[in-house]
Image (tube, one colour):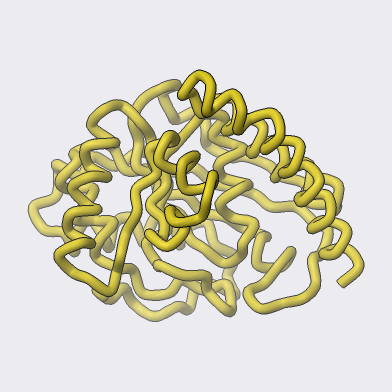
Length: 242
């Protein structure tokens, strides 16, 4: 509990620094790059001071600056900032449309090419997939979590179909990502943050154009992500569409 409070205070302080410097630059120049770098720095400082060490495996497989669709497992709130930090570049993220209504924050997400989604409206969700495909085809990389939510026990949840519709429509390489250790550091619903190592495995890129069926691509990505999970987390249910 004390570690989480300390980490949260660090995040708040660093986020305020990022906002004070980054937002004026965004409004004066229209560029979100400085705000992005400061935000990534703020998240890194928070979990680093909390004793969380991060290690990357397999990132040498990736071409610098290429548009990739990164698909990661999701067992902790630590996953997005850790993966984003390791990528070392500005990426797009699909996120809830409600967040775009927050003053300043919404403006920054639009400038960063984030894509809003309303999963309760199927037509709006399809429009979001098309917008996300446009962002990917423009050369921007994107991070998605095909489970759609954090796993409560660290095991893979069934995958949603939307990420794979996006992969087939955009046609850019899919990179399966396995985050190991974040569940132990900060599990879903836990009030405690624990020091430790988080290892992020970047698997070989997969060409979605090689798959005639969405479910075959889904199964291949799921198998790659699960291949780097520790044994206790490998007895998850088979992939299902949602």
